[in-house]
Length: 429
Ligand code: EPZ
Image 1 (cartoon, rainbow, N blue to C red):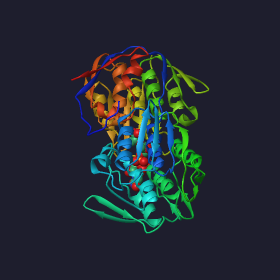
Image 2: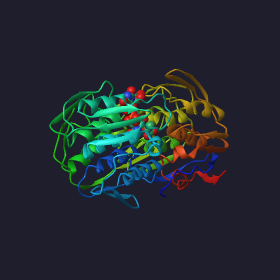
Image 3: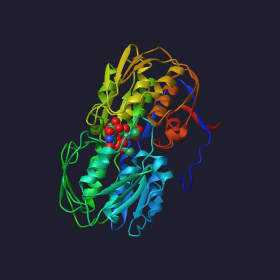
Image 4: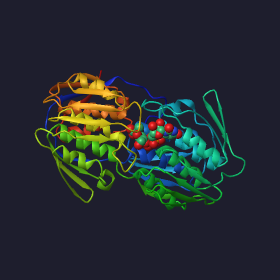
């Protein structure tokens, strides 16, 4: 599926008939949050970049549309994207594409590095509370970029090349770290980035840049050193597996008391996630890139789940794990420390019979013996995943709408779940 023009929002719903046991194997697709910055990075390559394991997602389509708008040639064969940026000509990202996803902002560092200028508007994306880009802009300004903010537009230019310099982020923002890496990799001199984000997707980006001839060290640690090089060539690169998709399928297995095997998982990326499932009473076993889970008939509560920057518990897994905690025998506590407004799924889960109290950053989930199916709406991407998990575990029919959110991050989710026995199908409402 590739969407080439304006996105058309069809009124589709997932009809989920629960509860039913899942059994079998699901392959976890490539990470959305790696693919997007990697596509931005491909702008910097003077020869072709080949990215394998790119998921078929609407956000990836949006990134491809941005590349094409800027004059790059992009070819897709299955899960492989080949990007030829030698034809890059445009420096303007249209507002409709900027609004479609937050991570469109990571194109800024790459475009100004390559062309010395860029014009774009403020990005959109999931409404998770205020999502400023001040850290991105302050870091790029420090590297010599002139940024004029005018009527919601950013007019950016740099005379000559960007300059490497020491940059310290006040918060380890994933996007700001990526933007600095993309701006610095071909800048003049070295950039030392302190308090950098340490997510696996940052390491994936560094691996790609280095394979193209960049000199990036320290990714995965708090200090990243980027020695600017004249230019980057191309490379072939395999996108890492999506750790949040893996966590979501684990939550689906847990909420349905099932046994499931996930293929193409990197368990080292799930270090603070897997213990939460064990605490809930699930048995886990990993072998190579496979992860097996067996859930008990009734889950135990998950105690305290506090979202933190990596290697802490990921904010993106909070919603699906909360959905499974709704069915636990006892009370679980969630503290959301990354985004101000990331409990929108709580109200929708309550339509299914969940007992949740939210106060500011804290959500208290009192488990119930059973949820009951109802019409619900995905409030955002991971909130949609939470409702999917809850719907699978609920008695009766759940009609999940707002699928454009879910389609941003989960490739053919209903097919994957139906293949392991879930009674789920996509329908036009
Ligand atoms: C990335 O968003 C992910 N998106 C998000 O995934 C994820 O939730 C988030 O990191 C945290 O892990 C992509 O990788 C494409 P941040 P990003 O900059 O980069 C504040 C999903 O569901 N902040 O680390 O936008 C910000 O407001 C999504 O797949 C500033 O104050 O996250 C937030 O509170 C959604 N100023 C916190 O930092 C800035 O300039 C973390 O944001 C930048 C961020």
